Image (cartoon, rainbow, N blue to C red; front, side, top):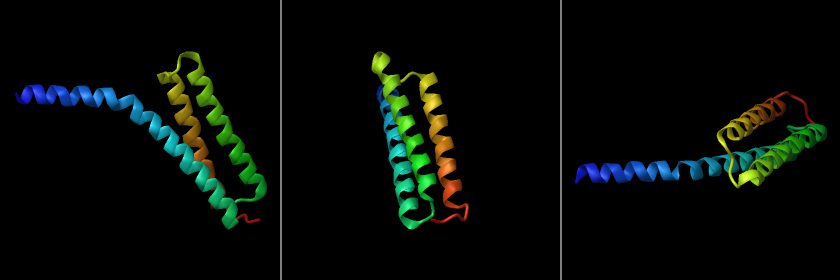
Length: 103
């Protein structure tokens, strides 16, 4: 009986994996956009910095749409690329908000 329960739990965990990953990418994108808008509102980002960061965020969203258009899903290579772009954007948002430039 315990084996059956463990097997069902493992199957459920595997089945939920990809969906959780997509939600993570979307949440990250939403947080990054919020950080950009907050930085612009608080004066931590210049108008030019905010515009550039917004453009990069839109480019990542476009990459996600393009990846899904092929077969309706994002494969591992595309997922790694999107994560890399999001990671780099997140670091740049942090750097720009803390670089002591104000508008």
